[in-house]
Amino acid sequence: MVNWLTLAVPFAYLGVLLGSLATFSSLYRKRKARKSLSLEPWFPPHTQRDIYFSLLHLDPSASNDASKNPNGKKLPSSVPDSVLKSALLRRAIEDIKRVMALRTQKGALAMLLQRGSVGDDLWQRFLRAEKEMEDEVRDVVAEANAYVPGWGQTIFQSANEMLNNAIFRERMEKQQAKLEEEKQWWEKRKEGYMKELDVEAEKKEEVVEEAGEKKPATAASTTTSEEGSGVPTPATKTPESSGAPPSVAGSDDDAVLVEADEQNAGKK
Image (tube, rainbow, N blue to C red; front, side, top):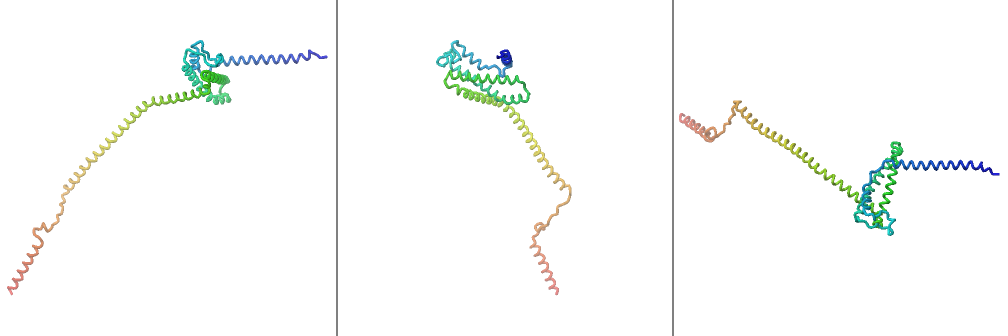
């Protein structure tokens, strides 16, 4: 005969064990969800999303749930579609910024978590932000497809181009703002260089003037020394200075000799 009491004890034990595990799991999940909700958000409030929903709900007949519309299109709204599309693009641009921030921060945060430098609360905040951004991207794609079929595939590409253009303009404005400062700095440097050149030119002129004054003084001192020495300069006697040409002097001597010979001959 089967002893039902003996069989009931293990089944009761299993039931109590499974029930306690289910209760613990349920309490743990609720506590974890409550704790995650109490954590500080990773990003600040999504202003562009709030603006879009504010514009969308200005007309009570407008709804952002495309499933409520039989044709899958947006219901008419008092706000023009161009304004709503622009607001949706702004929302997509902000989503791109946040997704890029999450991608750049994930690697460093995971490394810090492995080393124990950060707590599990920070990692939970990051995971919750990732989950929120995934839902946000899907919502933006659905909104874009509700306006124009297939726009959801290219809306983020257009938003990325707009973001790059805005970054480029911001950099250009910064450079333009620095332009005046650079001009003023260069003018000051230029004035300093011109002053240095003027000083060097004045020094060169002074050196040239001093050299010009020294040359006449040196010549005058040389002349004075020659006059004060009293040594006459020897004069060279030339035939011109002797008073008679050399041919005339020779003829007179010959005449004297001829007269002397004639006198001697008469005596004989």
